[in-house]
Amino acid sequence: LLSARRACLEAETQEWLRREAAEDENARRELEEIASANRARREAEKSATMRMEEDEVARAEELASARRACLEADTQEYLNREAAEEERARYELEEIASANRARREAEKLVRMRMEAEEEEKAR
Image (cartoon, rainbow, N blue to C red; front, side, top):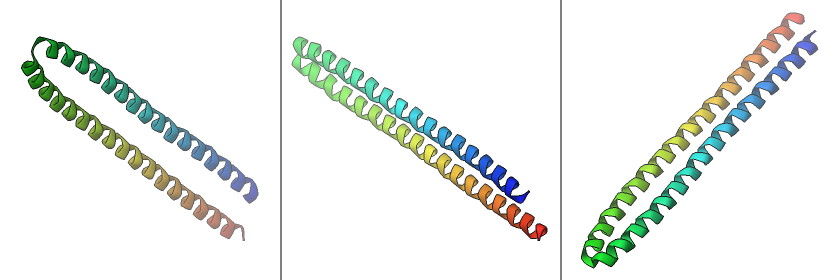
C-alpha cells in the first residue's frame, strides 16, 4: 500500500513538474516573441526615420540636422523604455520561475514528510 501510495505521489509530482516546466517554457517563448516583435518594430521605425531624414536633407541641410538630432533623442528614449520593459519582464519571469521552484521544493518536502509519517505509522 505504501509503495502504491509512493508511486502515485511520484507520478503526481512528475506530472506537476512537467506542467510547471511547460508553463515556464511558454512564458519564456512569450518573452522571446515580445523581444522579437520589439526588435522588428525598432528596425521598422529606424528605417522610417532614416527615410524621413533623407527627405529632410534634400530640402534643407540645417533643418534636417536639427530634426535628426531630435529624432535620435526620441529613438534613444524609446529604446531605453523598451529595454527597461524587457528587463522588467525578464525580472518578473525570473521571479515566477523562482517562486515555482520554491513551491515545488516545498511540496516535495511536504510529500516526503507525509511519506515518512505514513512509514512511521506502518511500523
